[in-house]
Length: 332
Image (cartoon, rainbow, N blue to C red):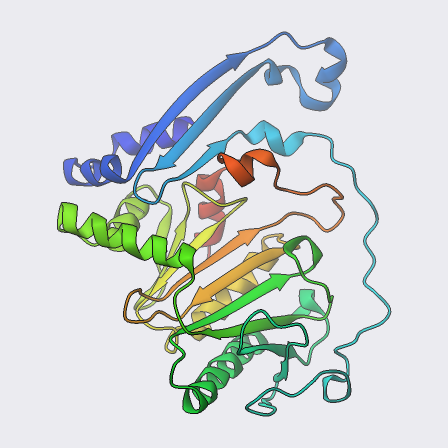
């Protein structure tokens, strides 16, 4: 990861200070003896590998980067979209939730049959092809989701935390091929988000500076963050949960849904076949924040997480600087 070292060398004193109080990193150069038979797949350069491990000291998140991990042989199978589509006629095949159907030009709501929370519903796209969704259709679905939040709040004043998530196809946890969002309105902030909020609060007490603003500033200085329009900030994570993770920072979602939809459209166009998207609306304890992470090709049979991801640190194979460059291309 010579790119990181070079870019760190270009930071000014203030930026370097912020980087050092958020991150630490370690680079290991590994040499090994490789039989000639392996060169046919990997080439001779596989004998010498560079490992970059980055730790976010504020939120205790750690990732190891090795581009060679992405070149391993993977078990694959042919992927074919299912013939049956239970969401093709949602009015007939899905239940109605406590606020009734909300329908727009490109989406409509339904109750989630198997609940995770008291208020848990779906926003189903009318377009049944997840790889042929336009920015307008994606924006429309999020507008429908936020309309659902408004109606739930009228009925239940106890709710505090609105959440939208999108498990885009099977490797991301979806059980249905037809594209759909899921929406939750919770009474309190989930524990993982409360941890993030608490750690950001402790950072501000210790350094007198906002953690998320500092994270964006130093990421931008490294070429890993960009503000699109006013108040829509995208960061390529240096400690990603998995491949090509983005962090999205906004003041409020309502004025940014067009840019959010554009970002998702571009993420798909850059080759993502399966991803997880998570948005939280914010409450009195936390600010609105979003995450997108790639979960790999649909043809791959093996899981993209293992023991290390569950209990130690994340292992990834993408180049964050190359991905950022592709993401920023033609973005305004």
